[in-house]
Length: 95
Image (cartoon, rainbow, N blue to C red; front, side, top):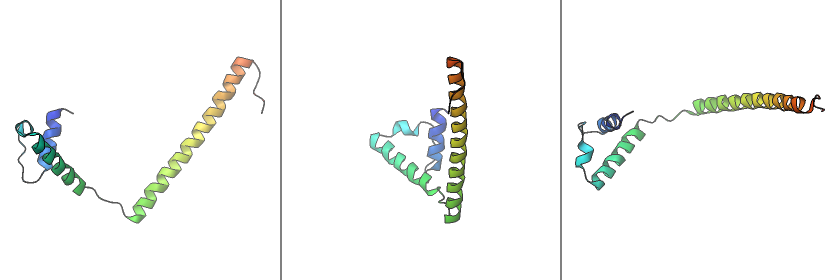
């Protein structure tokens, strides 16, 4: 994404300000900071907080995914570990 696209998109999201091409270059240092803060506030107003039910659902989905990935990684670790022992020692791994 180019700098012009980011600036134009961010400028268009601030209320009451037309999206000018090089408007940020005309502003001073303090003006750019104030514009940035206005844009941050405008973006934060767009954030939608999940309901309690959604939050619990999202949390459970993440936990189940992490557990599944842990199981897959454990199985692969065990398999590759035994394969490495077999390749380098010439004998199957003892348990």
